[in-house]
Length: 116
Ligand SMILES: [Zn+2]
Image 1 (cartoon, helix red, strand yellow):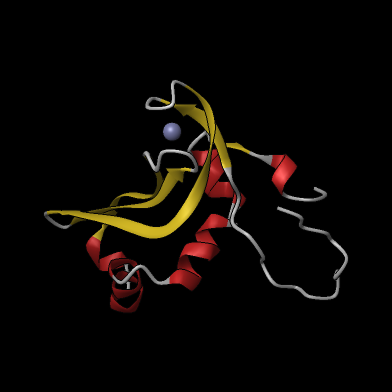
Image 2: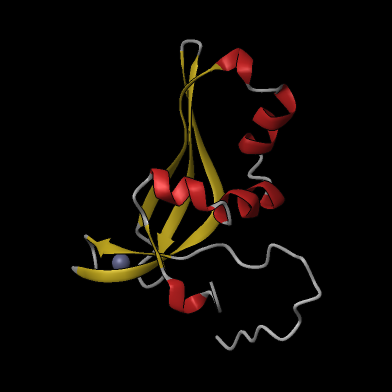
């Protein structure tokens, strides 16, 4: 992975954050990457939505909570559909949203994200 920060002009939200956490399958700390897939679980009129991360080595999954017990009617049908269809743009959007990681107490792998 050679990612240089040369092109500072482009304002693209580039790569999703990677997460460092202990993988129960690998038995040690591993890097988890965004699978660009969501998991949606509807329970009555409440919805839980996760962004699925995967261990880079063994593909063991780790669900990053995006919404918890969200009232179904606060979510637009459009957004709901995007989650259901694993919209990649949306997955990248959440994968680059630091607040999601803070909320999940996930450790972001800073070494893979040049600068900041
Ligand atoms: Zn693993």
